[in-house]
Length: 292
Image (cartoon, rainbow, N blue to C red; front, top):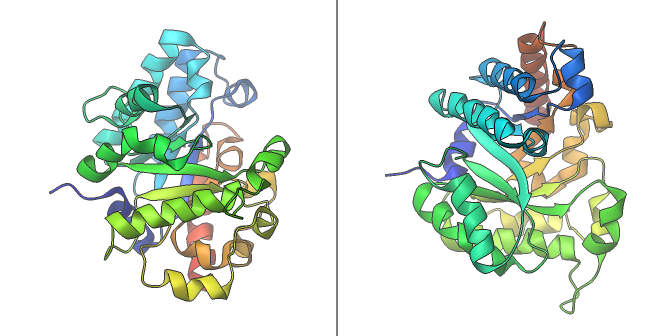
């Protein structure tokens, strides 16, 4: 029987692994590593992050755009990074932010979630601003093949604020609706499991109340009997959010937190990479243990 993505996340959390190690091979970082700004450089960085993350980080998250920019050679490089992670049984969240309707979105799901695809990952980031139902093309992989989705809800880029804080006809903000829809899916499909397989992306540098997202104790009791909602949280480390403040930032939504860090572990080059990943993973695990 195939384990759900949420159950595999729960195993990582039980081992105090909450770090999502970002793989962002953009030009300044590649230069910092002494690597050329090309597909070979991106592959080298990605494979080294994977090797250093096994048994230490909960997952890795390649930012696909930094591979796509090299065309077909970039995709070959990414395929090799993903193959290393699969061989090591390290969870991968493909940061692809795909969103569309009907057969188009289903094709994106085929690319990133289908078993045997050269780009196969354990989960992918998605946008659902056309409606949560537009993600239907991926739900088969989620239910039947143990895959996961992280739906953009409240992101830190200022250009998104007007859309994400907009209030719908049902009086929910767009961001809050993404959270509610993900929780409803998990409640329906993963009742009885510790962690659901559909998560959301929430920026750690945000005041979530401004986006209409309730993180208070009133919601904690309501959520207690449901699978925990996985939260992929960029913004820790280089962007300024402190992991020690995670409990205050996410409140009742912080039970299944994946803290993403990229530049804080990638800056400084290949030398010391493993030590940086281990140090951040241990600091994040310790801070979240104290906030329980």
